[in-house]
Length: 540
Image (tube, rainbow, N blue to C red; front, side, top):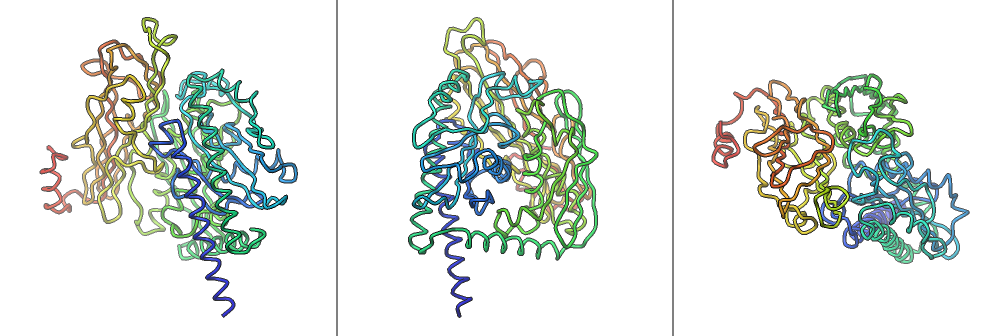
């Protein structure tokens, strides 16, 4: 009876922890200044024990942020051990190798005190629209060009803001109000999580989280290992070629399943690029682990216990383990491809119960203009970062999802938000007919968007688009998805990567990639084809 009561109490406390971190994430969304956070949900939030082990994460957020943040908190504790921190202290960094992979992501860590005793840490990450330098994009040659880099340090000390750091930050970015506001929103969401956790501990009459945290991590590790041990043991391989910046990038993985966990080795992957598409190891580990967790033990809580039995390595000097000072601003363009590569390797041991390849990487144009960027402009400098999506691959027994952000999970930026936040008009935003790969189960459809300046001025777009030369590949007879495309309407075709000037009065058109199909097309039910035809999604 005692064991049953203990298990019930642990389950109730676990449910409360999930509610606490979700409240943390929702506070961040409500208070954020950048549209990437407020509208698209490009963030993460979680609670950690005093040793830096993640206990629980919010459902809201991206796996690249949260899984990388799980490693990032340890870097904070290396520089600022718990014994050195006091109530009112808040730490911050946007260092790509000690945070979540590029300078636009700021991670804030807040210790929680019960009396004078540190009992936990809250951490959160959000994507700030601009960090200076070249701006968010793949054109940098070294990280020094990509923006301001803040090493791990104090955002608040003893409750007082670090005004020197904030002044330096604001002097180096194009939108200082949003940058400062987003840092305060990160601190606020951690404070909301801390307050909620302390109330929960009062209710459960807990003085410490150590024992409960250890039980949560041990249970999650055991549950994940139990799921892994149901699978056949052995080694499987897969590879994928994507566009890269100016030459293709090969992503090759070897997945080994044993009774002690899953090892993913990226030996054979392309070397570091000369442009800003390189990936720090923590970000590669984050999306690799997510690929595994999508199909193995996906009901097991995502924390230090379950993540610890999925071990990921990549050779130093490869594009997935880029050393300092490699340019990494557009690391998502490569990193978000990794789950599809891992899922392809797991196709055989999971008896085909994995999706086919999809567009994967977000299509995230950054629009800029105004004085200093456009010589003939008389308006203030402006910058707008938006997210758009392609189609996912066909699922084992279902069609793929259209215009869906897998694996990032962020939302597409609404038209109204883009047009309100910047002098941009979106003249078209609709499904892209015939973009889904055919098959017994077809892929998801991409979309078409058309962008112009509200006053017909020229504007700059920083492009981070892939899948133009190498579309998502189908399996078992299913067709490839349609490749992506970007061009000036009634004008030139643009490269998928890098900056471009859209001339005055002209419009940029983006067509995102469709997901690939699964199975022979002649096995697709006629009713499904008729439905797609009636909706206008299939015209051929």
